[in-house]
Image (cartoon, rainbow, N blue to C red; front, side, top):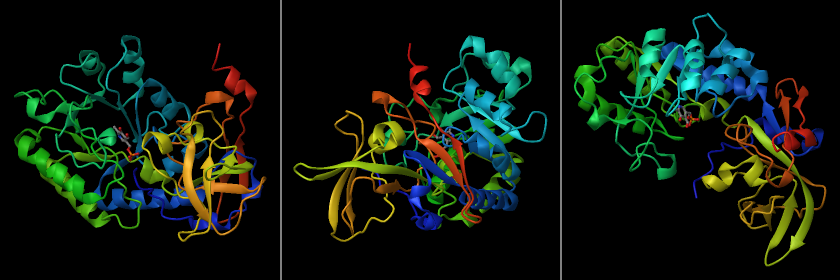
Length: 391
Ligand SMILES: Cc1ncc(COP(=O)(O)O)c(C=O)c1O
């Protein structure tokens, strides 16, 4: 079980959960802005260009806000790249950068991907599509696997044994990097600065002499740089050193750090059932609305939970999956039908992964501004969303 990374409720401690229909993701625009300001500051002090990883957070109603602070987006293929352009996360023809990486490309997508992307990153020096990309004029990069496992869990570690993500650095033949303008690695997950430094030292040891021709180096995502305890000065110093030594532009592509602690998932207690333990049955579902709870797995923090012994509830999801539970929580008061609950730190890797398994409704999406207290319902999903994905 991975630990929750929630830094606490922040402004959500003041949010009245009855203001939204349930289930509902509520995103605090001000918290997103303050995360973006931290990332902008890292970019300004280090010279790095900071891209949002859309896979983590694609809330396009906030594209303008993201664009105000960041230097573009990184995407995982054609559809995210289209989204980035169409919703103006990365408007066409300005100095912002759209960087696409996919482990492999479809033939019929290559032309459009090349026309949308500023950087196109390949998974091996022999990858399909590379020749076309070079001719098209897009700036090409190679994703390497630095073969240094520093992650907490092999599931989230692209350096884990037999990884398919990134070309193993030790296999890179003489001259194989020379046709690329960029080098990319992504090896971290919710980590502080130290593992990045160790990874870079390993790369430099192995490839140092061959990096001078590059135009850019992309340090991937997984940097938890908006967390209070992150060593941001260390990161700034490392980036400055890399860019000076190799005369390259350095890119970061955080996802989670952009939306850290910026959203909650609000649900309602539909019923209470006493079995071996006491269950509160919710209109939320871990497997549908916060799949990482099951996949990672981890136990999300709950607004108002207490750390000492109180009333214990297992907060259960509404699907038929036995494992569809958020876990056990201690509360100072008993729960009743109709009560509201909210899980913390639910803006990233949730909306982008939500599904309608069992016909469970998708959560609505609300945008709250903790400074002005303004609340906007951005989207509500209905039965048609469920039906239209089936045939
Ligand atoms: C290639 C790449 N870049 C960036 C990210 C974003 O990582 P995070 O959201 O942990 O910052 C990921 C996440 O899986 C990734 O695979």
